[in-house]
Image 1: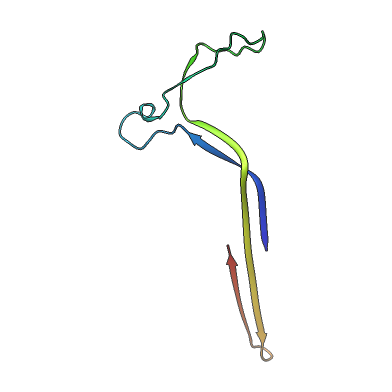
Image 2 (image 1 turned 30 degrees about the vertical axis):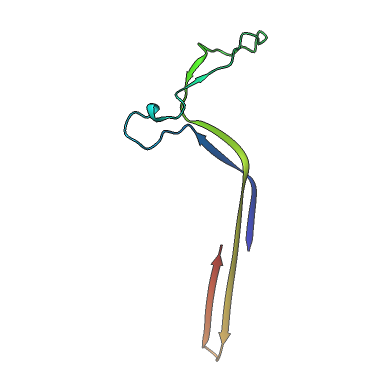
Amino acid sequence: MGSGSRKLDTRNAYNDASRAPGGLDARRPHQNLILPDISNLPPGLVPAVVGRMAFAGTIENQVNRVSADYHALHAKLQRRLARDVSFTTSDTWAK
C-alpha cells in the first residue's frame, strides 16, 4: 500500500517575534515596511494607501513545493489445523 502527494501548500512565516519578554511588535526583526512610490502608476491602478510607511507584522509566503509519501505493508497469516482449530496472526508496518 502506498500514497503520494505532490505540490502541497506550505507557508513560510517571516518576521515572527523572538521569544523574549516585552511587547510582541518590539521583538520583531523588522518594525516597519517602506512602501514603494506609487505616484507613477496609471490612474485606476493606484491602491488606497494612506502613506509610505506600514507597520510590519507576520509576513507569510505561500508556495506549492512540499511533497508527502506514505508506505505501508499489511500481512496476515492464517493456518487451519483441524475442523474447528485455526491460528491467525497479522502485522502492519508503516513508514
